[in-house]
Structures are given as C-alpha cells and as structure tokens.
View (cartoon, rainbow, N blue to C red):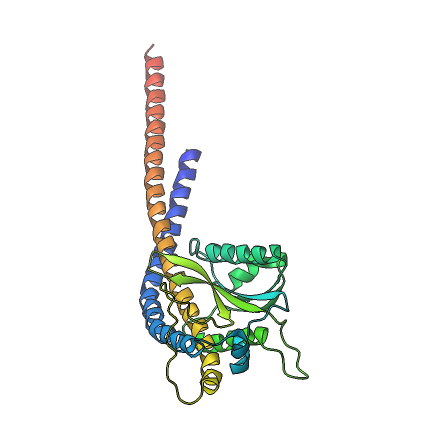
Length: 301
C-alpha cells in the first residue's frame, strides 16, 4: 500500500504542475497577440528608415563617410568590437534564451580567436547569467517590456553610439570599438524564433546588385551631412526597438509553445501513472483475496 500511496502522491504532484503550465500557456497566448502585433507593426517603419539611411550613404567612400558623420567611419585601429546581447529576464521558454546565448558566445570566441577584444553589453538577465565570469560585461540592463521599450532602446542606443564615438573631453566613456553588433531573436512566426547577429555600426552602404550596377543616389534636401546627423541616431534607436519588439514577441511565443508541450507531457504522464496505479491496486487486491482464500482453505483442512 505504501507503493500505491507514492503513486497517488506523484499523480497529484503532476496534476498540480499541469495546472501551472496550462495557466502559463493561456496567459502567454493572451499576451502574444499584443506582442506579435507590436513587432509586426514596428517593422515597416524600421525597415524604411534603414533604407533611407543606407541610400544617403550610397557612393560615399570610407573617408567621406567619416566626414559626413562620425558613426559612418570605418575603423581598424582599436582592435576591439562591441556586442549587444539581447535576451529575456525569465526562463521557461524552451530554447529561446539558450539559442541566442550560444550565437553570442560563438561570435565572441570567433572574434577573440582573431585577436580582437569583445566589449559586451547585455540586455536581459539570462544573457548576463549565461556569460557569467567567462566574459567581462561592460554594462547590463533588464529586458525591455512593451511598457518601457522606448526608454530602454534610448538607453542602449546611447551606449551603442558611445562604443563607437570618442567620449567628450573630460568624460569617461565606454571602450572604443571598430564595430558594434547586436545579437537577438528574430520573430519569424509563433513557432520559429531565429537567432541573428547584425552589424549596427558602422552603417553599411547598400551592396551592389548582381549585375554590378551601383544604386542611384537619391535627391535630398537639405545636404547629406545634415540629414545623416538627424537620422542616424534615430535609425540606430529604431533598429534596437525593432530587435526588442522581436525579442519580446519571440519570448512569449516560445513560452507558449514550451508550456503547451509541458502540459501535453504532463497529461501523458498522468495517464501512464494512473494505469500503473490501477495495475498495482488490482495486484494488491488480488493478493489480499488469495490470502483470504488460502486462510479459509486452511481452516477447512
């Protein structure tokens, strides 16, 4: 009977776990609609703004880029690169955090193998915890939410530009990097979140077409330098906002999928345990009946 008690206890424990995972799945499903709409709505603005900035730097050489704006300069003297690692603050989301963390770590090891130092800024507790003592973290932030994503993007954008621009006289800035990259989860669909690493700075000009034709520079007013001075910081902030929208939607979608899977597994386990319990109970009853029958036969004899 002790064995039956243990099985009953385990069935009750799994049922309680199923209640939690089922509730988390429903909550994630309710939050996903808003997060998905926000991520998809942010894309056209960010993509169009990126196109405008890239068009403005079309045809500019490396030297001309530096003259147009400090964020366009191509540098090789610092032998240092920056990485913004964007993760979540919470787990229970399947491989959401692990995938982007592995991608970020692979990037770090590759750059270090080539003799470059990597300056890391983490956004999200899971990224900071993953790197731990293995990699120095220059700055860290909590993961953004839909309520504070604008403020968080402004904070991180300022640090991204500080990694690339020399600090003002008398100020202690972040280590100067030759380039700055962003690692995040791109929200492709409810079932798919793709880890990506993109270069934020310096801004790249459009690649030549397959035919070798150079894109035609657009007509603009006022001058190119004035436009870039206004648009570049906004474009960097918009790029970070887009990544954060993708990360939030991806995290919720991954959690929903993981909790649905956990609920299904718990249901299956409850069925298996119930079957095992019934078999053990039947065996115990049969044993007791056999003992009673054997005792009765012994009395007759």
